[in-house]
Length: 526
Image 1 (cartoon, one colour):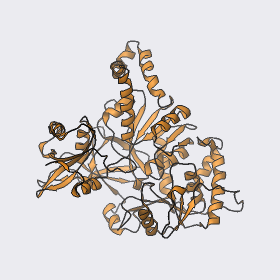
Image 2 (cartoon, helix red, strand yellow):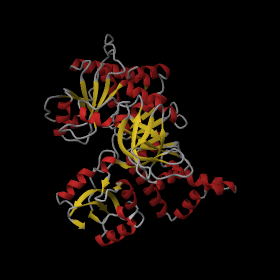
Image 3 (cartoon, one colour):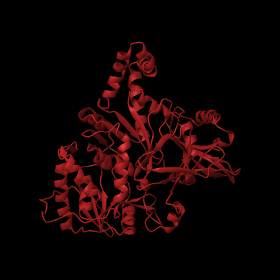
Image 4 (cartoon, helix red, strand yellow):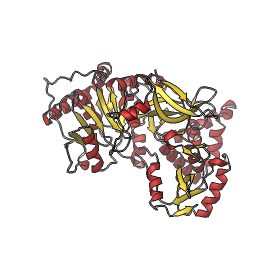
């Protein structure tokens, strides 16, 4: 079954269920729009087997065009909206893409391909135009997971990969239900946003509320108006929401009461004060619309105190783990009584995980296998040889360990592991989480660097105005005491500027390191 047939099945089973919530478009109506868009694209020259770029923010034309390309038998090249014309030219050239559906704001004098205005008004659908005959092993999407020059890693996902990934969502059935609303402000071109905004609504027959911006006021207005049931976001945004809420409560001098009630709610309920707990929780839940029952984090590890805050409101806070190569979520956590830092739970659906090459502490490399795993990078034999074994296991490159309850925990990324001259390994994620606790530190990147011929763990701190090097040095020295001495960061730089980030708010460590080498960060402690 290909993805267009998956949509057809949903339309047959739930024709009047809302699909595009803001636009009040049902699944049945969306199918009509898709056929009309397919007619327009065919007239523009798109045919079966073509690779068609999709370059757009989260607007209704994105999913409509996505399915229209599949209707015609094409493959969709997912393009990040944050890149440059130079990068788009290289990416389209590498995969032989001759046609890109984009918002007009992205148009430029392109090399090698034509633009199509994704917001074009379509006419009537051609009744004679029928969906292309696609195999489930045909490629549905292409995504770049590394640079656009040299020999990049391009991930081809088949219709079967996407379909099997959808089937894995059965494990989320205790929280997600038919006719509910999924909030969609994560970029749809990114695998996290694609999984939450495109795939999950198909499985649960639920609506997607698309939001093209990350404007806080627009988002809060959406929460108030549409009252979503599920909100997926990157950990950094969850932390921002939490901090803003706490700041507002402190401004009213009520945090002492709110924190007491939330932290002691079990005891209060036992003694008949459940009404007080609900009274405290309600205005906080109303900020998110009052109907949300699950919040999903992905793309990075979430701080335990952030998870604990949302769970204290009576919400399920789930940490997902996945990659483009695994079509998004491969594992997810379950709400538990005693949250352990960086836990991402257990495999979902028919996914399999194993840990190899463990060190003396039990940390090893995570390998995964399942029908939702891609079949290999496009035209990259070297990467494929390094990434797969003979039994079909894929090397994620992530370092993990298992606790006594068989829950997986994130320890760092192998490619970012710092190997000291002593041979000991240092995991940047662990240290970054430690330093983010320092008051006045906005963000931090820790990476391997060479100082006077010696390999060290180097940190670059993005700090708030008012932070001085002496204050930071003192705080870092105090934080270092919490870990083994070989992990200490004694060489670092400080800046008031934000660190370079990806669209999902992950730090671009290689760019931070290059900035350091180029002398961008001059305020150093070495």
